[in-house]
Image (tube, rainbow, N blue to C red):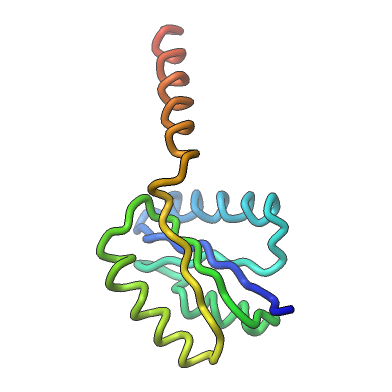
Length: 126
């Protein structure tokens, strides 16, 4: 059975706190999902996807699943990510699959409802 490494892949920001927020979510997901091999990577800042894949391969991953931490299927996921993935598959000689973005997942509506309720409660507390 192939050992699958998982990369939570975000856009990345010049604000360290934004990148750290993605790392925290990835860490919680890895714990909840039982992912022994996972990394966080970014398009616009370090660590980049190539570094994350390299690390996972060094740890024994035989294939990689990239989980985009992007809301919608925009230009980065349509144009940039496929090119990066193609190059990395050639470079590392492994299969790299990409999951769909978060958009369309039924849990998003629930999150919006929870945020609206929390916002209403915070407003009424004033």
